[in-house]
Every structure is written in C-alpha cells, then in structure tokens.
Figure 1 (cartoon, helix red, strand yellow):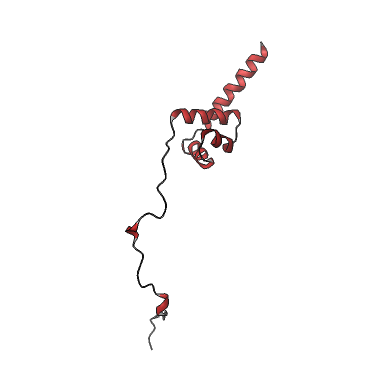
Figure 2: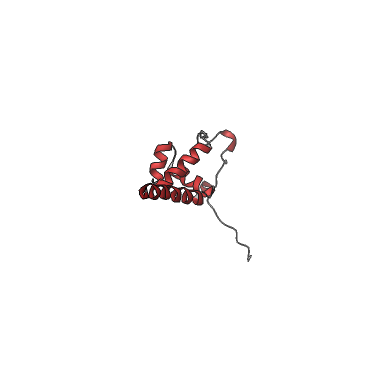
Length: 97
C-alpha cells in the first residue's frame, strides 16, 4: 500500500493539444490617443466648474474612466481646487464693485 496519491483523471478530460499562442491577437489593437496639455487643462477647467466626469468625457470625446484616470494618476486635485477657488474669487470680486 502506497501513501502517494495518484489521480485517476479520465482520458477525455486531458487536453490533447494546447492552443498555440503565436497564432494572433485575441483582441484588436486599440488606437492610442494620448492626452495633450490643452486637453488636460480643459478637463481641469471643466471639473473646477463642477461638470461631471461623464459630461467631461462627452465633451472631450473620451471615456469616463480615462478622465478619472488622468486626474487620479496626475494627482490634479490640487490644481482643480486652486482653479475653483480662483473662479469663486473672480465672482466675488465682480459682485463687490
């Protein structure tokens, strides 16, 4: 009697041939559209005004996740808050005149 486990897998469950990975791509290659500085500035301005990510994506013709990713990866929250504060200060300055 042996203490070594030997599995008894039926022959029909064992793959005969593994798929060849060099045959081609599974998905089509995506077209790259890198962010320019003007696109990033427009996104910062839109977010400072309070436009939603969904609407920003529609305006910039990009996806919602891309807009969120640019702001998160670039850590642009401080720039958005500074722009928002500047816009608020401009409105308050014009009202005092």
